[in-house]
Amino acid sequence: MDSCEPQLIDDCLIQIFTFLTQEDLINVSSVCKDWHEAAETPWLWRRMCLQRWGFCNLAVLGSEQANHSWKRYFLRRSHLEKNMTKGRTGGYTCKSLRGHTGRVVGFVYLKAISSQLPDFWSHNATVCSASSDGTVRAWNIQNGEPLWCSPVQSPLMKILSDEQHEVVITADSQGLIKTWQGQTGQELASFSTSSSHCTLLQYNIDNDWFLTVGTGQGSVCTLAGPSLTKKSSIIVYDTFSVNILLASPDKKWITAGTTENNDFFPKVFYTESLTSPSEDEEPLCQSVPVIGCRAAVFIPTQPARLAVLHHNDLEHKYDITIFDIIMKKTKYKSEIIVQQVESFPLTLNALSSNILLAAKDSNCIVLAAGEQLWVYSLKGVMLASFKEHTLPISSICVDSFRVVTASKDLSLRVLTWKNDRDYGLTLESRYHLLGGSHTMSRGFTHVACDYSSIVASVEGNDGKDVLKAYSFNA
Image 1 (cartoon, rainbow, N blue to C red):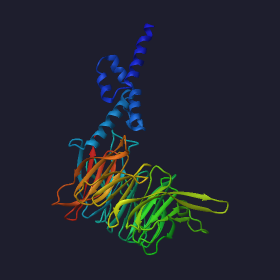
Image 2: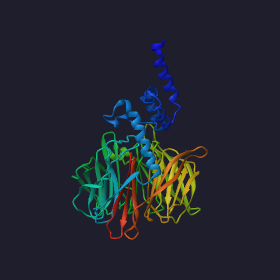
Image 3: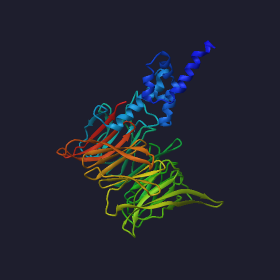
Image 4: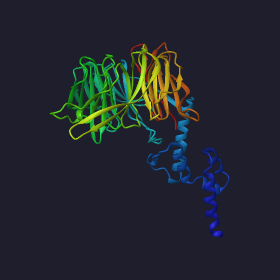
């Protein structure tokens, strides 16, 4: 019995330690050697990681010692989230990324750190920005260093990226689409749409790469591969811009819409009929039965659930209507069914401009207009509202951890998600980040986030915009 006693004690201690918090577990490890060894058990820290975050990928720990890896993962990640929640000086660094000589029209993460794979040891996020000066620039946002700059072309209008293949896509004022190798800035291909307005949507289906472009002439053109091989082109709205393009989470559906005419319906296309069109058949398409569309978003955790913000003509306000999109197949034909799930009115009046819409999992929708931010459940219950900016919100970024709003008042507001015992999921306002002085700048214009950083563009009074990169310490 004596030979079994130490093992029995260790097992009892480990079981007792499962009831301790992180702080308590660290404190008891200094009591004695036996308690220290029990408190360092990898299983305990793995259990704490999975209880807090649900999913953890130990591969990001690299060559760290196995006996300490789960503990170090927990401590670093919880420390990072504490810094992101508090936003205190010393918990993050801020770099000003200068180099563009015109307006920043957009920027994207080429290499981002996700909440599913937070790499604390070799965090090296890259952001690519496009400007009216006709250049694309890539930046290391941790040290603020420029990585490459493209040759000058016509003023750029749009930019997006495919992180999976590390490709950057741009559209200029002449309708020229280009793809760039993200690590080197080498131009890969180009395609001319002859449209001064282009809306870009990139998506991957299995191992195939596609880009769908909405033009100012009302057409939707689909290109394949970074080489931009044309697959299909279809007129959606005659003479009105296609300025809403969305892909469903399951990639089976593409939604196209216009905000330039209140009499048009948004359209849903079966993706395969755009990427692999049949010579004998028109692309499979169905209208979404609402007019006056101002914004739309797919619910990220559903295969194909679409939320549309649109005019309510009877009350001259806005509604949000939610639809499920499914395919109905019979022996002789296939048909798209757009089925209404929910509809509810908003407190937003019809005079509001620059309406921003985003979705958080299956439970809620985030809406910004003017100086205000709202959170609604998919049933139409207002979960939270905020009016903390003094000038209109210009951009929002929503992820699984937080919401960041950028405003013309030259501030970023950071809010974090929390589960309220009585009201469920809601937002809590935390702090603000400042972008500089109004004597030099006109406010924030765009914002984007990954798991451990926030990047925003500041409009300069001299016409030279600057990127501000806030990197939180782990």
